[in-house]
Image 1 (cartoon, rainbow, N blue to C red):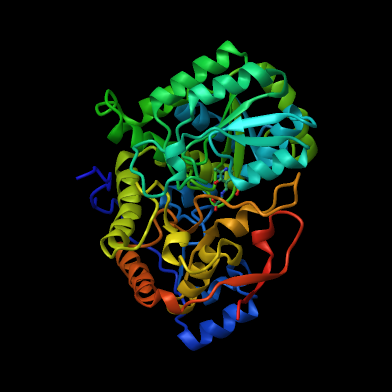
Image 2: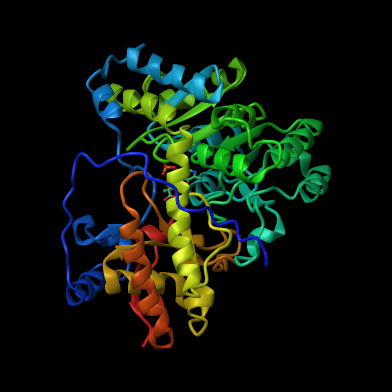
Amino acid sequence: MEKDYFIERKPMPFRIKTVEHVKMTTKAEREKLIAEAYYNVFNLKARDVYIDLLTDSGTGAMSKEQWAAIMMGDESYAGADSFLKFKQAINDVLGFDFVLPTHQGRGAENVFTKAFVKEGDIIPGNMHFDTTEAQIEDKKGIGKEFVIDEAYDPQLIHPFKGNVNISKLEQFLQKNRDKVPLFILTVTCNSGGGQPVSMRNIKELSAVLKKFEVPLFFDIARFAENAYFIKHRESGYENKTISEIILEMMSYADVVSCSAKKDPLGNIGGFLAMRTEDYFDKLKPFVILNEGFITYGGLSGRALEALAVGLHESTSEEHLAYRISQVHYLGKLLDDAGIPIVKPVGGHGVFVDGLKFFPHIPQDNFPSQALTVYLYIESGVRGVEIGNLLAGRDPQTGKNRYPKVDTLRLAIPRRVYTNEHMEYVAEGLKKIYKDREKYKGFEMVYEPPFLRHFSAKLKKVE
Ligand code: F0G
């Protein structure tokens, strides 16, 4: 039998101290609520959601150490202590000497694309996340994917589906080097299902980019989860600590861009970090212009304090073991029920294959969005479509993009839900799967010009 790479259940390394009550709704109420939201889960009120798996971004639970640190927030405009602690934490955990805070990940992306991307440039990466792609397109550049072919086959088992196809990239650079200002490696690769990149691939990528003198940027929203996968799947790393693996990964990056709302356990925040002063000097003016002075970047001293603590907590092996094993527990429950999911399960969520789940719904009628809507109606669980609706249109041709991996993403917030919640999520999907032929697709009645999934309005196909 093929190795499926499911990570077995691990103990929960924390106990629950504060309770946040949630409202229970009936199926009839949810039918009405989602219709009023034009069948777009972004339009729902969070209070009408029972288990919120919309995103793992900014939705984690902070530790008592983080809450305590918040009380130490230094709100000085320039040179605040809170910034110095934040900078030190980035230096300790990631090894970079130069740090620029930003209000969140896309703030960092806006800054570095402004500084480095000009009209007609091509920005290669494994797979850009949608905000990264949109920032590149905003500067009139073009994003290009170089992830390995295995990433496009949701059922194909491979330990590092976020890896870059190095030979394809090399051929591309031989012809197009002059149009390429930088390469972005996203770890883990969100758009591919939260899939990790191996250390070996990072090394090979770095060598090729050095040869062509192309700077290597990392998007490190989920760097610690990537390190956990390296430790558990890549030979030679089983006895290294997570911290050692993270530092080794980072040693290959020239600049990193981070949404600190994910692995760094913040409710808000982001940053750019770099090894050398020349990058710092190039990026600095855009931080001041768009985010705020370089020692706060749009963040309060309180937020910087919470992140300084969160960055250290994110590297705990026990935390990562429970976190990733919980995601895999949900994946295993669905897989055992025959529900088609992206395999292996990634680090931050389970991606259900909408095209296989609803083969009778054409991709133009948003099968994964349909699944997202029906799961909310069935059980009050909010996931998000990562498929045709999110992919949007090609800016050159204006035509819909048809992603090969078209999914409902169930992203699990860090330290928020128990495995009992995961069982409830699985039960809802199982019910829908049993009668899957009876469900219909959707069509758009309003489409915004970009990032359309956030505000599109839909109706059921009759
Ligand atoms: N890069 C990656 C890999 C991301 O997953 C995200 C956000 C960003 C950049 C942008 O960061 O939200 O702080 O501005 N991903 C969220 C998600 C929204 O749900 O996956 P941001």
